[in-house]
Image 1: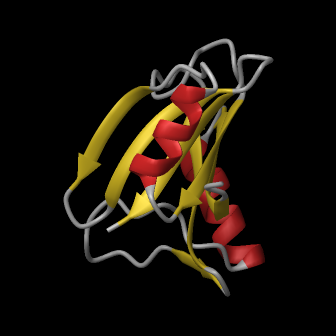
Image 2 (image 1 turned 180 degrees about the vertical axis):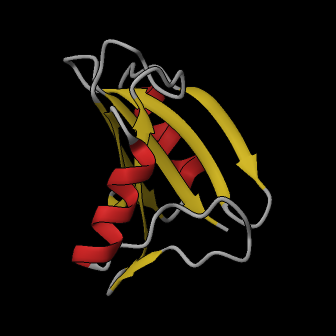
Length: 119
């Protein structure tokens, strides 16, 4: 069975993303999500974790949800096959050069979950 290997990121809606990114960086040492290839992401012992406060009006994940989890996986194709076999709908499949591959599912309560296979 394919399993999640770790948390790849936490995305959540806030009123002032820039101020909150600065607060987390200054007080907890959490680097904000990179906006270019020069920026360093936050790294845990297990690897990169994207900590990303989003604007309250973002369309990156459903407007009625306050957060989206991103889970790291080793083999996205095998994970998606397993999920499809369980009748779990998969959407938003994409590849970001140098970052990896992504797909989205939703849990039974409709919470968005992004799956990420790092490059």
